Amino acid sequence: TTSLILLLFPLTTLPMLVYYLFIVYWDKSAENGSRRPFIRYWKLWRHFANYFPLRLIKTANLDPNRKYVFAYHPHGIISVGAFGNFATNATGFSRKFPGIDLRLLSLEINFW
Image (cartoon, rainbow, N blue to C red):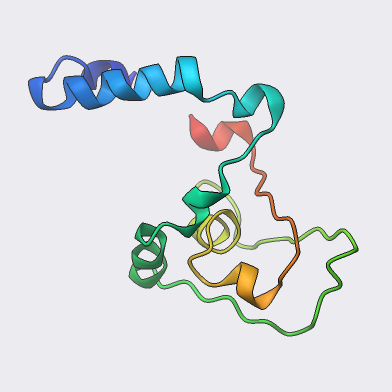
């Protein structure tokens, strides 16, 4: 509903229309599971990680040929640490753990 309200204001109408076109016509990741890895490396995420501040501390080497489940606590609605560490490369996950294919999963209720 917030995004629909933003359509009413002249300064936000065009960005919201572009966003809607992106969601409807270009972004099919929810249907086919595709990713855009280049977004993980945006410089914006480093500012995000420095603002909160987020740190990723490596305590063991991980074999990239195996599968892992990473747990994050505290979890919940405001899980910016999980996002910054695992959904982006702001804290250097791909450098610290090369070859590990990483996906972040959360409950749908967190996006309401």
